[in-house]
Structure formats: C-alpha cells, structure tokens
Image (cartoon, rainbow, N blue to C red):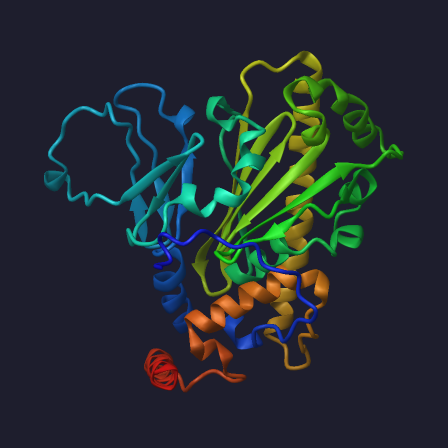
Length: 353
C-alpha cells in the first residue's frame, strides 16, 4: 500500500527520546539548500483562506524563500499563464484553508488530516473572515530552532507566564505518523490575577453556543511538519508559519481569521487573544534568538531531549532520515555537504536491500 493511500496512524507515546540535532545543523547555508528542496518544496504550505479571495480577479501572493506562488479562485478570468511565465502547482482547499504543494507529490491534505478532521470540523472554519493584515516578524534564528520551540510546551511556565496562568494541557493530544500532531488546552478554573487574562477566562463561556459540551472552552493546537501550526480558539483561528530567509534568519508569519457572527463579548475575547498572541510571539523571539547566539559559541552543548519534547525528537528523526548528513556530529568539509549526503543516502539504500 502506498503512502498516498494508507491511512495515517496514531503513534504510541515514547518511552524514551534521544539526541537533538547537532549544533552545526542550525547554522549551515549548505544544509539549508537541501532542507529547502526536501522539506519546503515537498510539503503543503498554507497560503490563505477562501475568504481572502471573495470575487473574480482576486489573488494572493505567497513567498517561500526563492519561490513565489499566486493562488487564484476558479472564477479567475481566462489568461494564458505561459505568457506570464507562470507554472501550475498543486493546490487544495481543506475546510476553507488554501494550501499549495510546489513539488506536487504526496497525499492530499484531507487524507493527512483524516484522524483529526473531527477536531477541526468542530470549529467550522469554512465560513471565517480575515482579521486585518498578517503579522510578520523576522527572527534571527534558524528555521528549525523556531519550529522546535513551537512544538514543545514544557517551556510555557517560564517562557509564557500568561499562558501558564490561564491554561492547562489535557491528555487528548495525539501524534500521527505523517508529521502532524495536536494538543488540547483547557481554561484553568482558577482565574488569573492579571486583569486582561482574567477577563478572557470570565468571557469564554459566551462561546459555548458554538460547540458541543466536550469541545467548548478550550484551545486546539495543530502542528504540521516541517513549519506550520494552526491554532483554533473559540472566537478565531490563527495560522503560524516559519519560513527560512537564511541559515540564521527566519520569517515568522501569523494570519488570523474570525467567525462571521461574533457577539460583543466574543469580539472582546478576540481582542484580548490577539494581544496575548503578540506577547507570546515576542517572548518566543527573545528565547530562540538567545539560543541561536549560543549555537555559535564554543561552550554551548545541547542536552538530551526530555519526554515532554517527544514531538521535537520525532521531528529531528524526520530530518535525519530525510537528510542523513544531519546525523554527523561535525559538518562535512565546506562544499562537500551535498555529495556526502548523497553518499550516505546510497549507503542506506544499499543496506536496506
């Protein structure tokens, strides 16, 4: 059975983890070239939502380091794309989300999301509307470092005290064997002493009309390797993306969308949540940029990955399996990385026969 037709499987929890990627992989221009081809060109990238293209002639632009994509609705006026130097790429609309795959291969998004589709369906994201313009930041860090940070939550008590005061992660989360995982956060019964946070906790009950009792008053976080997170809240959803700009520079993009019929109380919640998102992003930027500076020092050594970092470990294994040169403790001689990676791939293929 091919990977395109086989249903995604839920992975069991890990009893132990292993080593993190070696430090050199977070500052290598040569490695980034391989990563771009193997990860970004071959993965689904969300470029927007159907509500961003409300009428004929509307279009979006999405920049992915060296490549740009222009998604257009089906009712786009007839044009000769060849005259404009445009090449058609694979596109899919999943519950209103517009995604593209530049390589054109691999399973459909709807197939990949199958085991957790019911979680997404509870939010009915098809009918959402945009909330302003995307928020864009440049972080001085390697893209993998930003993605590592997004996938683990055990830094929340120290890194994000606002979230720690408001939320607790329950045990409903799962990890799929296709690089997708999700976690569920519930509001704490104990109210925060910070007025803004307390107000959000007090208001969240006004969204109960949108959900069944088992889906109400919670946040859903979905991570999709190699670089994309979707966060569903009772009053909106946010798309988080990490896009490489260089070996030690990344673009962090946040698009937010809203249900169309919010009450005044829900709009107040949304405003509070947008401010919290900005606060959390700024905290993460400070954290990962400090770590990136450490990557360049002679004394920094990464410790073992904890069980709470199982998603990070699985991502690192995905990197090592896809680009075996990332297993090396030291980088290859300058200019030889791609050749060494090809040699290691050939050797692994030969051993597998």
